[in-house]
Image (cartoon, rainbow, N blue to C red; front, side, top):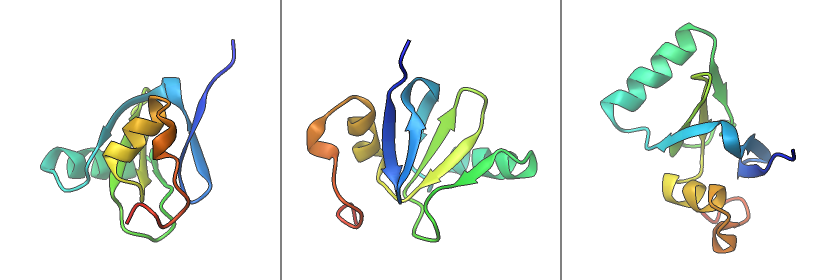
Length: 91
């Protein structure tokens, strides 16, 4: 069985079948997920200091921050080739 990986920005990738949700960071529930993940040591910062535009929730409740918008990430996870931009194009 081969796994598919998706680019989530700043040369980082995530295994597609581990992603449960992609959410925008501005909601109360997103802040709660991020804070709880940080407390438990399950927060991965993949935006490398850039603005956080989405949170990826994995199947083990790890939260990954990304500088790519949720809509773009969902397109990438679903294999849409038109969503594969270079860094900085998703601003």
